[in-house]
Image 1 (cartoon, rainbow, N blue to C red):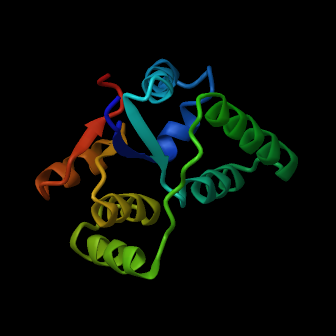
Image 2: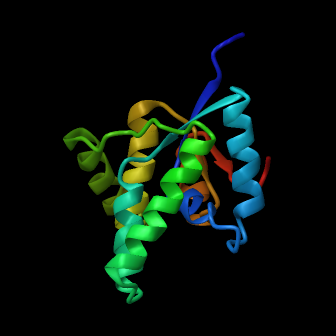
Length: 147
């Protein structure tokens, strides 16, 4: 069998692991593609940090955040997603430059996009801002909902 195509997933994918999330059905389809070795999904390494920051900012207790992270980890492992990208200084430099040129990018989204550029990976996201900027820059981005 040929090597599967690789793609970077980001934080909306993690939140989509919850069956109550509107992205859940799409996320599960992508996970099945990964498990069938049609795609190799690589998680943006900054995504778990973004999950924690988001939940803390919304007032979630640390015990609940721990449970959420555990559930996410279990679901990813169930489908064999174990590879994470590593945020490096060159990636953070590129992310900063992206934010200078695209003020609408959030801190975390700029890192996801910079990682995709640096690692030469398509980015799977439902974030319309990320999709628009990636496509305008000639970077392959795949709408998470279109599988």
